[in-house]
Length: 119
Figure 1: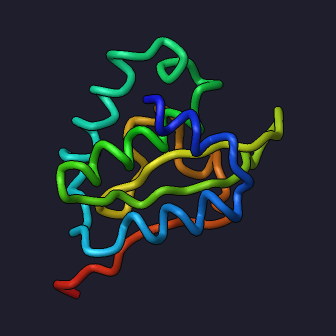
Figure 2: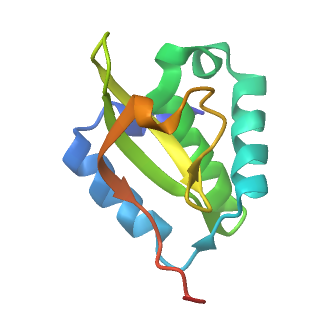
Figure 3: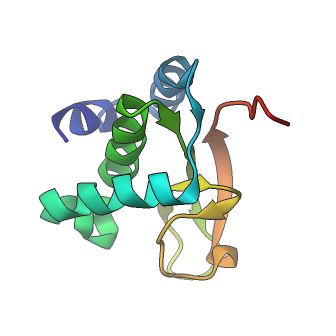
């Protein structure tokens, strides 16, 4: 959690560059692996459990997955409907992990993923 909060203070470009380096060599996370990591993050942090905690929650989730040898896709985007605003989330197996809204509610601006070595 502490590392995720430190990274969250960086600019989007720096976060993207850092996560791109950190994700190298990891295998893509399955949905179940990403969901378990996200569940663990929200269980230990009230800030991350809140909707407004999307950036530290998503960062902590990818970092926890990386510590376990996997990497979900980290995404940053905006809400496509009012109220407009930025949002960050993780995806695995091509779908958002436990965001609780229809995926069309968000538009991705950029993502950080690892190539699927089995494709």
